Image (cartoon, rainbow, N blue to C red; front, side):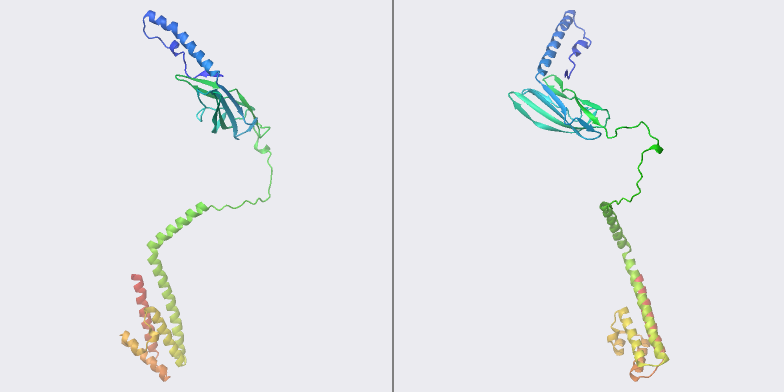
Length: 325
């Protein structure tokens, strides 16, 4: 089938402009002849262009792709154009196309295009014909292929117009079906990244407070442990004097103070401690406890209370320093 891209009868059907009677008669005399010659030329020219189209298979399923082959043979000097994606392929829908390289033999060129189409219509027989546009200097000619048909392959053979919910042919299956668990790695990565950012922000804002809290908690725990051990040995020495208990109480006190205020009390004698500490009451109590150990004689328990009070004061100062820092 053939047709013209432009309407050549515009010259005849458009209203004439004011002309002299003789000129107007000349237009009516010459216009039919010109149109006839042009139509004859287009018709004879299109006889040299042959277009064929066919489907790759005789049936198609709903939504499945099917290939449509469109081929054209034409004189080598001609210029033809195949339909592109903007063309209407109804009742089919365009997916993509692929060109086959042009082959020319004895002055005749052969071109082919493979269109990948699909359909969502459910007509039993579906038809398609495509054109080829022959481009001329001031006009173009449309040459159609023959109509190609394809059968629609129904998946559901008998489709009722309406079915009640109670009458639907449903199958019941209560068997457990194991579905593989898929881990959402992109979502997990986003969550982990957000948590890391939040932790960094919290550490920048509350890091010092958190460190100070745990330091104070650790100091409280050590102080409670020291108090229990120190009081236990002092009570033993008070109930029945023992040089070992008295010496152990002094060692416990020195180790605790050494860790609390970073002074090596365990390596210092009372004389060396007096060079570092100016608390006269503390130095007097240390000297008295030394006499109790070396002379193996009981002494006043007030000296142990002085050691306890000194450690309490140092502990309070340490806690206050951390809270202010």
